[in-house]
Length: 154
Image 1 (cartoon, one colour):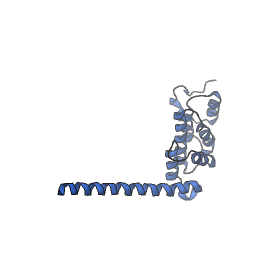
Image 2 (cartoon, one colour):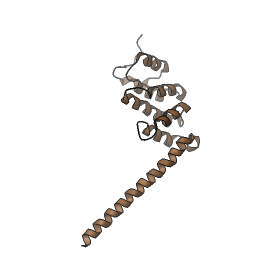
Image 3 (cartoon, rainbow, N blue to C red):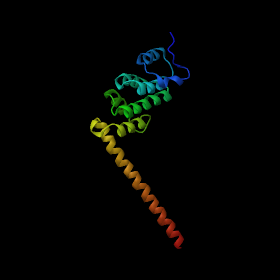
Image 4 (cartoon, one colour):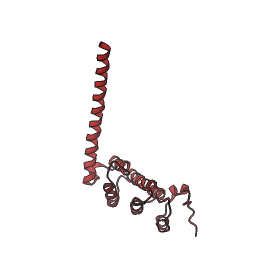
């Protein structure tokens, strides 16, 4: 039985809307499962896509793992929330690595009041770090401007 999806190139997988097909692909050990779960994030309910996204986050291929985290970010954007399993998987991976964009998408598109406590803390932490980076950049600019002004005055 042929599925109609091109698992070799991965081109048609962004349109996949059958969670059972992705389950079968996991069993067959297909190589483009990260791409497929992005399709599920776009075309299925969050409850259907979530367990498959979490499973794809455990893939050995770094590119396909990255696509799984992209799917989590897309799910946050589309649904305004995530499942407890997706929150847990993102928290386990943590910011600063492969999950960073998915965590930032979650913080952006899920209302603050609906976030689990760890994500609320990340929102505060990232805002403080962004503000400190802004102030550091401004101070470097001010020092550079002052230095250039002093050099012209010699």
